[in-house]
Image: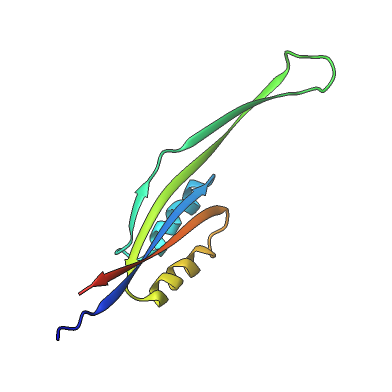
Length: 108
């Protein structure tokens, strides 16, 4: 009888957003080289505020906020490596994350 081994592969997908470009790039330096990363497009949000709340409608200040985004994926057979990868994410200030974990079963 042939036995089929089932190996489990864990896939961790991370979407990150930050207004500070340097902190987002420092994340790429903290991660091992085996993790693939993709820079996504940046979002620019522009808004205008009135300087005075009462009369002068022509006095306005304009601001913009830039959000830089990046996407990381990691595949591993060891759940400890995936947890260590997620643990690295908490050391970055000013970066928001969305993490999706998947478990794939592979017949060998």
